Image (cartoon, rainbow, N blue to C red; front, side):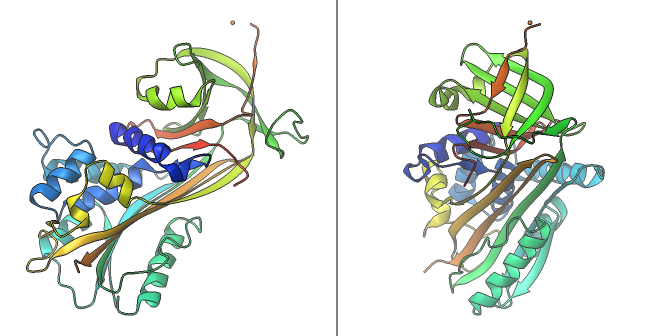
Length: 350
């Protein structure tokens, strides 16, 4: 999923609507939702989904992918000492009859909850979905669904919630007058950091626990880092660090971005989702994603949800490192080598 994470980041960063704005999303949430959709995709639609997700269809079957995500969910649920929650859900219209095999795979491999709703009552259905997501993300994502297409027959959801506490954090009581962000800052004691000389980027590693950590990347040239981050080679360094206390929330419609990444057919009359239900021409009408990130004296809390609407197609010296210009943030899970959340903070006041 790492290749997909960086590819999706670059696509979002290149989008005109993202210029000068914060970028933050969960690669895991998006990829889980699309992989679950692929369970019911066939033919070229399935090939495009696998290609967009960077799954090598020559070596990987849908069953292989399903088993990999099942292992990921099982590992998350067993790690009771970690404040992390991941899962999926599928909301189906009362009159819609999906393939039993499709639902069985979603429940077994993607730990999906299943619900029946009346999508003709669009407002009521949207509220039901939003309440579910709000509960699963501890109130962080409270309105994933703004409105629903009246021809909706299924709504597929992937969510993730993470709350990590820093191992050694002291909240500064004074304001840093030299920071461009005019609010409280956090003074972190010396942590493991790196300096990437090739890309002139300082990388701060903030561990939350044995398996999760946050990386903050402070580049001299953001564009250069964004274009080469997947090939970063870093060396160890130590700093005294000052980080702005911030809270951000982002919201995206991913239809255009995913189309540009090669996942085209699922949105139109060429969609083949016959693995979900036979005898009906289904297509994806929208893919939405929301994410939040809060960094304070206790640590970091992040949440994200992705919704897919399926419709009937009609050295001794220690330098000071201050995050007083745009920086990147990545929250990682070492146990699975996954990027849970990723983004760029341009203005933490938003």
